[in-house]
Length: 416
Length: 95
Image (cartoon, rainbow over all chains, first blue to last red; front, side, top):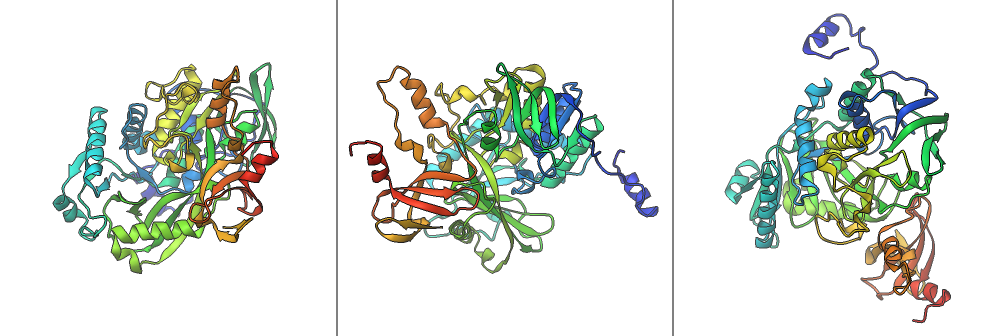
């Protein structure tokens, strides 16, 4: 069923009795060409592009719980491609271009809103760094504009421009950045994949890999053994737990990141803003809630909840930048588990086990990467070669000293 | 989280900074044949368990001692706190 305005009107007039489930609920078959473990944004996008762009057949997505129940349902919904390094920027720009055409491509309203993202500048050194970053973005075909204080004041008059310690000196804007309705991304990809014959199997936990002579033959699951020629893992947050079942240790630690939503407000914040002197980022959802977050808690965790000191730190960052927040009440807060990699950048690569492929290490930036991650992982699964924009995301870059470390902080996952 | 410091008693985790897996105490031998491989694994690869995790915390805002904290990564419950010095000595390290 194709969704359209006409269809909505027709259903409205006939009591909404014609809608069908957006995807099937099939039982697992005994064998597939490709199994993708993880029914989150990245896994579903991989299945979708594998079926649509790479002619993949007999594909299954295995999900332990329900689809879209992990980080694609627990993030701050920001999309952008404002990276500095060559290994990253072409990939994230490819992703942003896919976001721009996504809703037409998979015929689903994902509420992609290019309302712009603004990284604020508070020191001269930061202006130099952001100028360089903006130039790197432009060289890679992305858009970037350095804004003056006057230009920022026009759009965001309520910011604390004259803070004694961190006055706002300017900002780096990416006007094509913005926000997306995160759950709809998972649902849109699931529906699109299902329509192309992908079996989305929920409540099916992978309990082990069947590996014979160094080749992965399939997966053991809570619903029995399922054979596959290729197995792709896309379970960021739980990558360590899953890959340990294949005997692998990863350059990844799992950490908890908290995020927050305020009560609903009238439109106040037109775009996404980030504080350059602390770690605080904020946007306003279409329902009116201010969606914001800050640093990870900083210790290994699989708990999906954090601790209060980070809540205080985020609130302080918010107040320093945006004093009007002071009387806004918090509605919800939650924690998601991040694959924090050793250089802050992801991995999309083969493993040393034949037929076993890995996608993970997204740190806390996985949501914006969803379309490109799916496309590039599908490319790798279909052709056994990395997509041109994802060639740097290799496992062996750590051993070879070719880190993609945007902040240059070294092999310390809680600092990325 | 409250960390029960062996010398100072219960302290707020905010006084500490976190380094990571306590396996980092076991620095490889730089003279070994496969030292490059060992250091790669030491520096970059992690067990990253869901459950009991032994990890290094530094009492930066306190007495500046290193602790080995045994904590459950699923619940954040701390079950054991030792001085990293004692752990290293028990494994035959000199200082």
